[in-house]
Every structure is written in C-alpha cells, then in structure tokens.
Length: 392
Image (cartoon, rainbow, N blue to C red; front, top):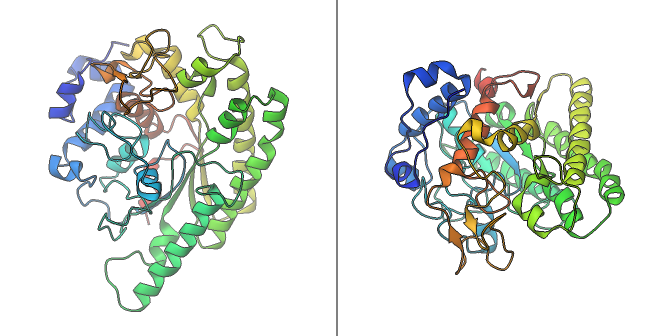
C-alpha cells in the first residue's frame, strides 16, 4: 500500500478535502473510503461546518448516540460548562466545539457519510436545533457504573426517555419539524461505552483480577440499556466495542505497569479490553436471538485501532504512541498537570501525522481512518452497511 499524502493542519483548515493521486486511490480500498468521506466533507459549506451543522440530506436518517468522550460532540461543555479550549477543534471547525480532538470525531464522519447534520448534544440549550436528525447523549467521562451519576449510561437512557416523551407530546399538540413516532422507531441507536469502566478501574490501581471481575456487571448495564430502548420501540442498534486501552499514551505515561508488548502497549490493559469485547460480542448475539425483529450490529473498533497503531507508518502516520497536544516531550508527550487546551501545553504542527491527539482521544486524521474502516463493513457483525437503517 502506498502512503497517503500527508496534509498539514493548515492545509486542512482551508479545505476539508485532501488531494490523493488516482494511482494511490486505485491501489487501496482504504484510500477510496477515505476519499469518499472527504468528498462528503467538502460538500458541506464552511459556514455550516463552523456552526457544527451539515447540509440537509437523508431525511430518513435519525440517530441517537449513547456513550463517552469518543462520541461527545459538546455535551460536557454544555452540561457542566467545562472549558474545552483551542487548539481543540483547530483543524476542521477552526474553533473549539466541545469535541476532544483537533477536528471531527468518528460519529461526525459517519453522519457525513449519510449527508446529514452533525448531531447536536442533548444538553446544548442554545443550539437552536429541533433535533430532526436525532440527538447525542454521549458525555465525556461517562461509564455504565456507578448508576445514577451524571452522565452514566442509565442517566443517558433516562434523558432519552424524557426527550422522546416530550417530543411526541409536542407533535401531538401540532408542532412541526420534530421526530415522529415512526422516526423514533426507524432510528439508529448507537452505543459506544465501556472504555471508562475499564480504564478508570486500572487508574484506581485495582488488580487485573478485580478489573475483569467487573466486566459482567458492565455488560449487564449495556444489555439493560438495549432492552430498555427496544421496549420503547427501537429496533436498529449499532454497538462499538472498546479500543486497545493499553496503547493510550495517557495510560502509558501514568501506569507503573511494565508488561509491555512488542509495540509498546500495556498487555494487561489490552487483555482486559479484549475480555470486555468478547463479552459484548456474546451479548450482541444473545440479543439477536432474543429480540427477533431487531438488527444489532457489533463493530470491532479494537481491531481497527490496533491495526492503525501497530501499522501506523503503513498508513502515513508517525509516533503512534506520542501525543500531538500535550507536554513533556518523548516518549509520550503527556503530563496530567498540563492537559491539552490549558496554558503551557505543547501542540504539534501537523496533527495529520499523529494518531493520538491528547493522550486519550484521536486526531481527526486517525478518526477518518477509523470511520473509513467502519464504513467498509469488514469489521461489522453481521456485515451491514452503516446506512441500512435509512432503507425503509
């Protein structure tokens, strides 16, 4: 595979599209999918993009997202007023939007593949949105446990239930341009959570045995959420597993573990992530058997991210375990006392060469890679196009 052309953040700030040679495109399915994403991006005007809004597209595409910072498009900033400052957002939006990245997240790129607007955070009171294409309930730091703590998974579900009830109440009263009952039924329900349940347990210095002992309880919470949504009429689910936690620069910089694999990742952390993923995959199959008229797609995000990290040079990236926006220099450029967006942080010139943005979250370039692999269906069980829920 030929390396993709490396594009500077300055280049990307002036154009969301990337020049890729025809020969490279034909040589690589990944590049074809990446180009598709970037072409979709360029169809969105800059003014709309800066506002966090895409062009009006597929009116059948309604999405609801439940998760953590991997999918948070501004929930933490809106819900708690937590400052997420530049250089977050510098690449695509040219301003901070509450996303923990230099640009778009995976969920943004998946929305653009459908030609629909970026999802508005449910907690954003000033967005002016009528949420016609869904809502984002994901918030930075969220986990499944403990329950009833903002913004745990069951709290996000309670927020959705309130959102749905109030929306349908307004529709019944004659309100226009809101999601109908059919819209809720035909929507895609995206669940991307569990990373913090595992990572936070390790951060509290719990043993590997204690961390993995909690996994069945975490899985039960996800099962309860899916069944709760199903009982409300949801029938189409898109479930992401968790990534290789032992390859996160934050974990590597803070951990005292010395069980590193040949790529420099913490073996025990990744082993716990794989155990969680195996249980989540088993749950997905169990729910397919129980919920006969539901479609439940399980996506192996771990495999995508581990491939990206361990084969970074092949895909045009460098320093897969080093942070773009951090402090301290090699080997990880991460210091908990100087987080990205706070005074004193050091930010790389070209985020497109980096996988990690701030030690936990990815650059837009890495997110583009991940989204393209998701859209390929090669990592999905069953192999289902992302837009399947719009065909009704």
